[in-house]
Image (cartoon, rainbow over all chains, first blue to last red; front, side, top):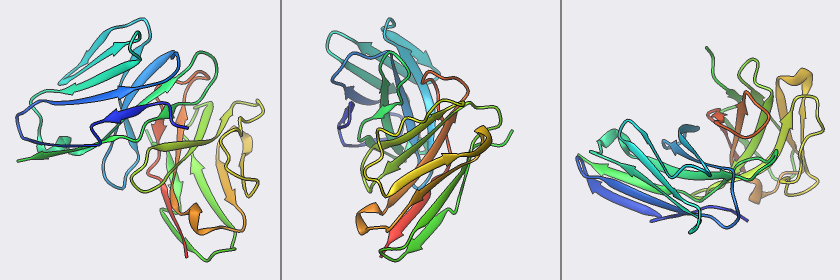
Length: 111
Length: 114
């Protein structure tokens, strides 16, 4: 079964607006990552946040992690049409384990 | 440098046939992962190779699925006696370290079983 569950499943916004996607997970984690997938292509790593971190920034991306609620959010500020893609959270638990992905949020940014 | 490559990019096969999917990881990456993504779904872990250690096969859905990694580099995922439910995009990823960190993904192989 999948560890992460993103919501919303789909999000449509106007260019320039902010987009917020959420991820919840079930078990304790070591790291949480966000990936982006353009249609028909492989995934691209966006950002990694460790379990002892609460917030991380990278360019227009801001990720928060609340381990007490087992949830994370990805904020994309000043969205662009090129941000249109599916976004996935992925977690790993302590030890040598592969990533467990959620089902993703499909973001559409309308110019 | 070159990223992760996969071949073929698309494969159409008939039910019951065997297929082989290939992954060339980034040179020097010790860890290699195979995932499956069904339409509109997230990624489902299949198998994980780390160096010379025995692979983690815990995600393989049935004994029709197997994978090899020769010489610690190229990997082949084999599906025997394909079924229609095997239709999906098969994604390969590699990473430079043993513990899961950033993974670098290939473009995937889209498998269609008729």
